[in-house]
Length: 432
Figure (spheres, rainbow, N blue to C red):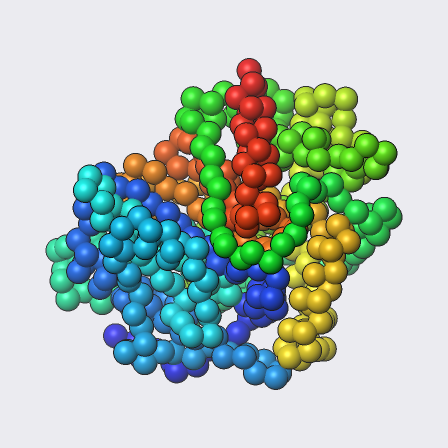
């Protein structure tokens, strides 16, 4: 087996996420429910081998004044799997943070109920985004399956796979960079300042940091109707969810206030590669701002057409690339220690003044083959990172024909998020 280096350089994307540790819990989780029991010893070994298959997962993040790096953990520091004795212990694990500076970058919890198993994989966001988490699940499940026939199997470490955004820059022509740079600053700085605020759910902040996750499921038959509806209007299911999101925000508009219809939407940059996959586990996403201004539209269909048109134009102009081009000079000029202090402060200010729009991330479709542990799960969902009040990160993911909306909540925001999801579900159910 190839020897794994002791240290790996951190990437810009790793550091950007780590800067935001002060504004929320930077973790992404995949939750799976099985109607059978998993082999605990084989699962434990598969999780440990995954730390070698993708070496960054078996590291800890080491902050330094100029440039942090990744450092491989000793064998005795690589404990990954927790066995929950009951639902309370499982929930406690689910809401617990993960510290990238301690490592490893993945943790897992198995809750063995009488008639089912629940497996939760928690990933530090510094190491991976949602696309990478799906890839991590595929690696773990494939090793788990292989170990059934080859108990001594050891995967070859992926030490040459790039974790940098340079792996997608090679597919962007040189003449596109001035356009990308211009569009980034025009999109983010001019509309965000004139006028400055975005429409938000009404949340009264408090200091209670008791984390919970709220989820709502869109059944397969409803999702099928919504998908057909989006195609009839020359859009996508992503456009339907964004439009439903805006309409569910309408009750939050205060009388006499000018509503600002803005939404942050991450884009998966892996789509720019012919393979559609990253070379290694990494963050390979970029943030976009959907800005409809002060006019939402005359009807749901009208807004859907505006959203579809907006997203289509952005996809034609290198969607998601802007922040990696526009912010690159800052990461070159300023040391990590400076940005680690400045950026969280600026983000907190944007939350407090209502400038930062809510975030809605499409975490993608989860393939049955990627989460099969002898047999596929009956349900799978992805859970997003959780910002502190009053900013909220919403997400949706799909599996086996159904779709799940999810968000992390605090006591001050749980009821608002539940009502908001119910509003969204009502609109999606009403499409025909």
